[in-house]
Structure formats: C-alpha cells, structure tokens
Image (tube, rainbow, N blue to C red; front, side, top):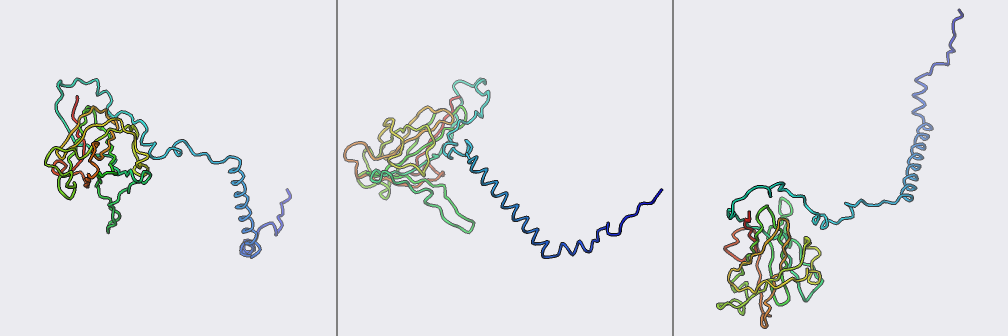
Length: 269
C-alpha cells in the first residue's frame, strides 16, 4: 500500500493567521461588514414598520381613569349564603373621601390645584393627606366617596362646619339656625379625576339634599359595595346667601372635634 503524502503547505501557519487578524486591511473589512449588517437590519426594520404600522393594544388605549372604572370581581364569594342575625349586629366605620376638588363659577374651565400642600423634604417629596374645602358665592366643593366592605350598605354623610370667625363670615356665623351652605347629590357613576374637573365639567346635580346650619349635620342613604357617591357643597340656596365664606383643611384625625366632612358606613347584615 502506497503511503499518502501530505504537502507541507497544507497546514495553516497559526502565526501567519494571527498576523492577518492584526492587519489594518482585515480590521477594515470586519468594520465594513458590521456596518453593512447594521444598515441592512435598520432598512429591514423601517420597511416592516411602514408595512405594518404600530397599533396599541386595548389596555394601552384605556386611560388610567377608565381602568379604575372597570368592574371589580367580588371579594365576598358565597357570603350571601350565610345566615346573619336579625336585626344585624351594629358595626360602623369612617369612610374618607376619595376625591375632593374646588370649582369656581367665575372661572368655569379652571382646574383646581392638585396636591397643593406638597413640599420637598430631606427624604423626598411629601404629600400631606389633607383636603381643602371651600364655599363662597362662586366657589363650591365637589366630594366623592366609594362605599366599601360587605354588608355595610347604610351610608351616613356627616358635615361639621367650622363656627369660628376666621372660617365663616360674620353674616353666616350664626346664633340662630340660619342656613350657611347647601348639599346637592351629583349624578356620577364614574371615578372623578382632579386633573379634569372644573365648574363646567362637574357632574350634573340630581337633587338638593338639605340646607346646612353651623350645627353638625348628617344624612343617611343606602349604598352598595363599590358604589360611588358624589356630592356638592355650595353656598345657601336662598336669597341673601351671597356673602357666605366657609373654608377649612381636613385630614383623617379627630373628625368629630373640628370642621370635617366624612361618611360613616353602618352594618346591614
């Protein structure tokens, strides 16, 4: 058998190959290839984008406020099948407004300041949980609550108006039961947005609830879980109430001891 002879130049000289990789011509060819590849991919992407324009998904088309209005699945599965004592055991809790905004009839398209008491601290931006209420001849306050929890379907709106001279003008700071403000129920089944509500865009009035005096006041209404209840606190509805001025700031503490507007929910099951 004749042995196979392999030519000497068959084997690659690795030192020559390493020198080739370091040569300027080789590096230039590699850069040219990579740039050409990037340009080709860019052209392909532009072509695909022109042929198939971007269409946002359904979730992207919904603004944040619409997402809040989506129906929430019940958290209280089969609780209706349980036997409850009759009459129900009394339970109650305080429900705070989810929305408070001031609107002005003189400036019907002006939006209220959002989080106007925020301030910068060493730890970052602080937003105090304080809500601003004001009633004048042209200014009123829009309030919205969301009823929560199960079997707590009796809602009671409480209004404690300030009685000091600094908060209510002399004409409305009364010793006699003179009306100083009026509450209206508003027609709104959607969550309100502080960034969009003005006097012109506020929900329409459903009916007048009551005229308020400087004495503590409350109003009961049935409410379902997750139901939104909207009200407007405005100047008295009678003639001569034009000089009323009521104003206060409110947080979630000591509501029974000072000016406040809040809602209590009572057990019905």
